[in-house]
Structure formats: structure tokens, C-alpha cells
Length: 236
Image (spheres, rainbow, N blue to C red):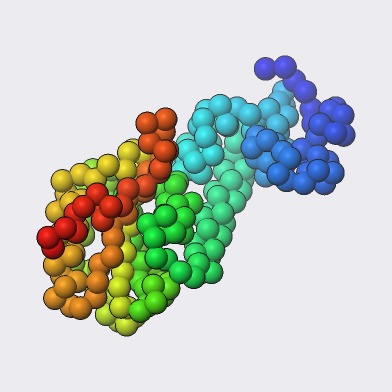
């Protein structure tokens, strides 16, 4: 790697100066990471270390999920830089969680997916959540229910409906992510959905939908699947 110190760059090419002049949106991801790193190491600038990080992890999502040890496995990343990166990505996730508090009406699968997409994008394991709604389909809160491995997620109707009863919810939507990126429901997903539909009927708290979050692809224009739209409510 050619040694180029950031201070040797033209002011218009330095990440900090570019952010001040043009705003953060004008910077590449590697440049923003370089600002978080602050310094490089002997023989490599902060920008070069940041570019090596991006090359190693391939995406911001993968970088945000990296452990401290994985980050420290990259040349130039010590404990201080690894901690700074984890802190920044954790703040980003918390901000995404706060945004959902402003979401008013959740009356379509798309709106529910929009609410939880960013928060779930970086999860490396499945997270199951219940979106609790009032009689006008407006958000009360999002309740975390369970999290599991890539292929196993334990969900019991009792754990789903207990917070709904406590919150006085009139209805709910359950949501979970598929870290593989493919939102196609598994047999277990379908079985859990049918159990929850029946439990909701008994408790008079309607389960409106079960939404699985994944990733878009050329074959999949949407990054989520609605089990209601797939017809799993028919005959229930």
C-alpha cells in the first residue's frame, strides 16, 4: 500500500475538510470511517486503514456487526479505534429505534417494514418482535420477544401476547428478520403464525400480519414478505 498521509492530501481530498465544505452526505463510507478512526499508523493514513476495513468486511452492515476482536484483526485497528467504531454503529442502531417512536399509522405491511428495516438490517441472528397497535392501528410500542440462531427461533404465543395485554393493545403485527436475506417463510414460520392467529382469536387481540424482513435482490424487488398477503390467514 502506498504511504499517503492525510495531511499530505489536498484540502479538498481530506475527509474532515470535505465534510465541512460539502456535508457528510458527499463523503464515501470509507472517508466517514476515517474520520471516526482519526489517525492511521506508520505507513498508512486513517483513510487507507478505513479503506482496508471496508475491503475486509465488504459492507457497512457487516462492519457494524463485527466484534471487537474482528475489528482488531485489521491492521491499524487497536482497542480504542475498535471501541469508537462499535460506539458509532450502536448509536446509529439506537437512532433507528427512536425514529420508530414517531411512526404514526401502521396499517400496511410496507409501513411496518419501513419502521423496523434499519434496526434489523445488521442483526446476525433472527430477532422476533411484536408491533403493538391501538384500535386505530397506531403504534403503542415495539416489544422484543425472542432472538435465536440463524436457523432456530423460539416463540411462544404467551410471550407474544403478554405485553400486548399489558399495553392494552387492540391488535399487533409480528416481525422477524432472516439474516440470510431471503424473506421466504419457513415451515416453522408458518406454524408459528397459525398458532398466533388462533391465540389472538381467543384473546380478542387480532394478529394482523407476520412480516419477514430480508434483502432485495434482482429476483426480489421487495425486501420483506407478508404472510397475510401470501394467504395464510384464509380459513383461520
